Image 1 (tube, rainbow, N blue to C red):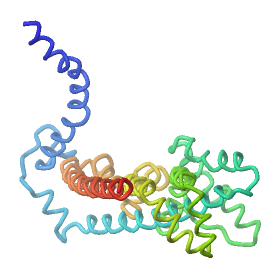
Image 2: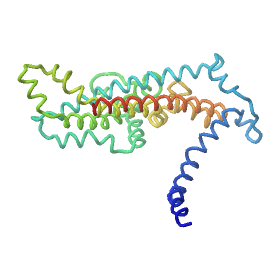
Image 3: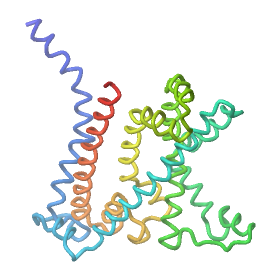
Image 4: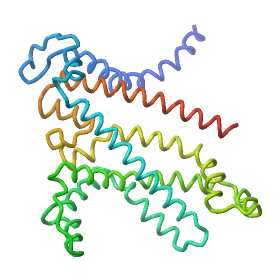
Length: 296
């Protein structure tokens, strides 16, 4: 009997955590899937009906062009953010890794501050800076002889503003990862390359980049995942602008809490869940590949 109790003891310890996971993670997923097959909205709040895959048909059919538009916008958003902030982070890391650079500690502290401040606070500060009449950005443009820009009124400039804010928020994390990868590279590789007459470009191509890849690639994939499902920056800056600046997450949110079409929003959320599941699977494969290369 004692042995039986002892074998059940670990499961008893795990029970509170499992209950929390089921309540906060598994149940909402199951509820969203069930909800996606109903017509729950503000007109059918008390008595929603089962409508099968009608919500999914509406999303994928030509009756609702929002799905394709939002997916394409999200892909472009993710690609632009990744290219800009990974490239900028790599440049900053290379500069901070220079041995002759003075005040490295000060520069590192200042560059990591955007990451240390809560994202929603930073986004609201940027929203004030993008104000057409009183914002700091337009005041700077006026001081150098340029016209003010309606940053948050025009969909194109609003997306540019969102990209600027997201790059400002995300670059410090990637910079720290790149800097850590650079500092982990043995200096003897560069000493041997110098004896062979290798140029700076050759050092980066054949030494720096291959040795940084195992550490940086997982961070890039994680950031790709986070950027794809970005919500706070776009929503706090633009509120979606009636779908003109929506990404997949803000689109689903607005369909539920602005249009009150909960069944449709649940179906769209389930599609997002499948997309993120595929990205997660891809991320795991890439991380495993990077680890194999690093260990090999």
